[in-house]
Length: 422
Image: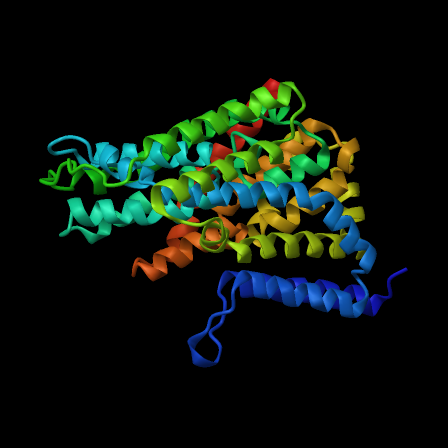
């Protein structure tokens, strides 16, 4: 039985961690606190006050090693995608044509972000496609720096609801812990994602219509110079891996095995085509900080469970429809980050005994809620940090206003489609 002091301290630590994730303070020497370090401090505090124990560590290790291995493999595939020329080929494809209009470029960037989130995952899409979108704007419209905003935001929005469980780290973790298979997940979430993309594109296109229409005709067409790096072998491997997921699921091959097999083949391609060793691929391709953040967030979720939050959530969710679960998940994820909320929702809904529709409704809310506030997801935090590094700050007020405009109808449509499918 937890004491009142333990519970109060646990909730206080969590409430202090949230604003630090939103705007990490600068320390001595200009160093800025990373999300992983903030979460690590919260985990350490939970161990000190007794909200976490060795048993929780063992539970975390038993349930999390498969999704973590999958994510590490996906990061390696993303690294190989960039090193072996696919990203450069995508840039040429987006800029195809003698004088593409701003509307055409905007639509292509949005589509490219969708394709990247399908083949890889949303975090990798943010990291790789956001700088690409900024570079495209600066190349085609050097006199219109204001155009970077709709293009960069299009990338963030397109990497929304995960069509496959591999498309979002937390969706992968939750689906794995809940025992939801790849094909079972995709059967429902692929149509949901399609509806999200359509509604998001229409609303965002309307919101930035005046800015795109005022852009001059670009004089910079596609760069026809041949790529020095042959990218077709890696492109074929990516397609093969994506196709192997549903086929493997039919024969009960786990997702982590397919993903890691694909990553090993990608390492062979890197060695063959780019003289990159496996050690170098693991060091530069895998974001170990992101994996530590994910593990830490799961531990924070277990600590909050031990503090009794899941009991309160269980009472809240009892006899509620998936629509209510999805809406509450979206709002809570926006202010408390979708990573701990995903774990708390899973535990509150019953884990492996939970209804699939309730789990998926909570995941939809967790995917779309971060569109209201950047603190809502690791992808949002990385996106904001990327823009800062490229001298393209996106104001919090603009983020919230666009989020409300786009996310309210999108969230409702997504949950309605979910209800129709299950």
